[in-house]
Structure formats: C-alpha cells, structure tokens
View 1 (cartoon, one colour):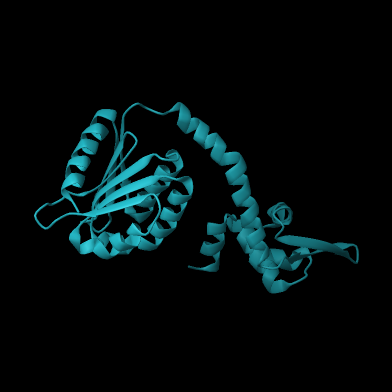
View 2 (cartoon, rainbow, N blue to C red):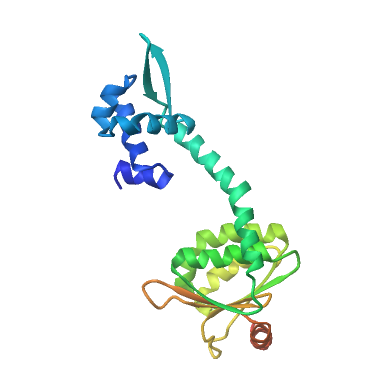
Length: 245
C-alpha cells in the first residue's frame, strides 16, 4: 500500500493527504511552498489546512505577520483514530442499531461471505445471547478450525465472560481443538464416532441456524432465522449428542 492508500484507510481525503504529506516534508512553511509541493490550488489550500488543524494533524504560528504551518507528529494519527472510534461507538452505532431494531423480521435468510463475514456471525451471537443461553455446534472440521482458531479463542473468552453456554460436537480429526474447549467454563464437548457423519458445520442459537461452507476458495455461511427450523435442528442435535462420547 502507498502512503496515500494508507491515509485514505485512516479517513483522510485526497486533498488532506497531499497537504499533510507536503507539511511533513517541508516542516514549518508559509502557504506558498505548501501549494507548490501539494499541488492543491490556492482557492482550496486554506480550507484543507483548517480541516487538518481541526483534526489535530496540523498547526500554525505567526511569523513575520504571516501564518506558517507545520504537520503534527505522525503518531497524532492514533489520537485521531481513537477520537473517530469513540464517535462511531457513542453516536453512530446506537443510531444504526436503532434502525436495525425497527427492521427486525420474524424470519430471515442471509448469506455471509469470507472470514470477515463468518466472524460477524459470531459477533452477532455473543451480542444477542444472554447468560445461560446456549450455542449448539456440530461438525466443525479441523481444517476450518485452523483458519480461525486465534479469533475463536478470543471470542470464547468473551462468551464465557457473559456466561453463554456452548455444546459442541467435533469430528474425530478435530479432537485437539476439543481438548482445548473441554477446559473452558460453560462448555461441553463430545465427539462424533467414525460411524456417524455430520452433514456440515452447523451452529444453532436462539431461533437461528447457521450452515458453514468452507469447501470453496471464499467460504460462505447461510444464516436462517426461523423458530420452526431452529427447533428441528435442535432436536437433531440432541439426537446426535446422545450418541456421542
């Protein structure tokens, strides 16, 4: 990634990036060299500088009756990101959650793509579930566990902190992950025998059923919200659970 791409990820506009990087290279400077170095027209330069100042990424002093500008320390970007994160958490997320609340449907079917999409399902689980509610997991293969194990270890810590219960049935080849889970609170583990097969990796929680497909290059997950389907899968899970050790 170039510097421009990285700073765009932070949330700066292209003009702000050009002016900020020009300030880093120039040091304390009047506006003329900044215009020349950044390529930003004079009609936009003060607007852009003022935006950087408001973000805490630039400042100025008066020298010989002229404003001279300079960039703040690059580490100031971390403070900018923290402030941005705080604003998102305190102002934006509650509004978005309110919108989602009004849009809740009795039944839904959603497709999630990629590892990030799958993680978002697990984040939804740990957010929705309360103490003593449960998650039923069946058929998690070792090859998949390896891809997201570090994330799942962190996720399990948060699950346990909330008192959410987990019952998980592992395939025989994934026993090493089962041994790790056996030591966790609010967690029960059993293993499929060689004679019993699971149709797929399935998670069940509340009225939701999630089926994971890791057979393709970009994994996908199908999330269904249906009380009837969830109840059917729960019954199937308990049937298999009783046959496992």
